[in-house]
Length: 322
Length: 274
Image (cartoon, rainbow over all chains, first blue to last red; front, side, top):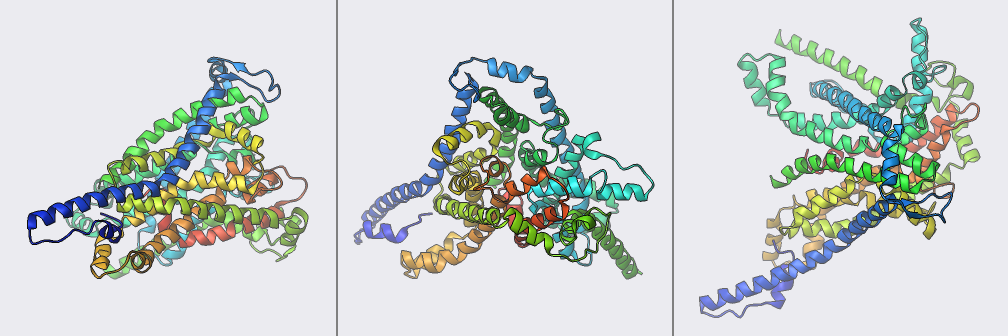
């Protein structure tokens, strides 16, 4: 669809004559010019965004790759030289690396399990006719808008604190020994906090998808004697499949990069118990000043994220074709 | 009979939903309540009735200069959103209205830049910022936030613009509307809701961004994310003050978020779920 029709009309006003053949030839020539013009204008409009993102993507990333092959420590910056694969070797053979990969996976899988299963159940509940649905929705969605440092600090100090936290109060009320969550179950505690932040997102997306479900189909299924479980399994779940895929993929992208929650709760500890790959790279870069090693870690993180990204792009790309 | 069953079912569903909603919302509610308690009260066990002191809010402002990070957050979130819109509106516009064979590839590629983990470019960006004096400046962080969110902004605008029917433009032209009139009277009114929604979502995302804002700032340009994170190594009693600072930090965005639920779904799923 040409964007600037009036403009090209001025440029390529066809001389109308009684001869039909001539007229259509001129018109098509005008059309061609218009298309060309529209196209160059379209390109000019796109250029700033494309160029900016191109720079944003290529410059730092190629620098990361470059540094990853350098011996470069900020504590001794004069001594910079080519390192070959040494940085990768050190980074990958560090026991902390494999622990961080394990933690990264635990965080991603754990949070996904809680949020997807919980999100489906919650969306099904909120899809029922209930009183005050609007307010319930607002309450449920709220944690998503809480900035990560606030979420993490509130949970750590006011909810899960072994002395004064709400969990400890409840435990004492029930006559149990309060649990020191971040000392005894650091990774689980972290997963719980991150899941709290992402459950609203999953619920909201799934609820939106659920509301587009055809009510008549549901009724027909009930008429045919399908029980609630059957109609959920054969009707609702397939309908939600696409939304679930999107939730999983988008959350994975963000969950691979969990950072602030770790920083303010455990700082990666005890030991490396809650250090994920993103946090390990940060530790290497800004705490050990090891630019080469951190860059190697960064490259590995990029590769891992890209594997996930490929799947996400496919899912979103399909939508574009519709 | 059927009616009684329905009402009963609705009552049970309502009770369950409200209970779960309360549990999920509780940490936020408790933060707000605690912000009105005194420090000894804050650690005295669960109590949903604060003494109602405003002392914490006053103290957060006077002792820790809350206003500065708050203004930093406002400037960076709004500034980066406006910058992103200036770049993204023409781009999304041309992609929606004169798509070419490569439009889809470009959109996909833009999305892929969003997938790049921040730690992948932490080192070079930190060094570049250090060497150019952009570390701990509002300008530097505004630029980063603009670039981080630019793909989402382009995508979201694109999904909105794509829904503006082309026939309306043609009809306007038939009626002899000039290009200027076309833009002012036909396109703008149809595009504004989409732009506003995009703006809202982007402000939320920029406000809560917690990697670059923490890593690239210190005392000068630290927005609320970095300010709150600095509470993680506390001395003495501080929960009530932490709560007050937290309440102020999340309140504006929480309210904006409540109004943008639908846009959120659309923006964060890149139009895949509507």
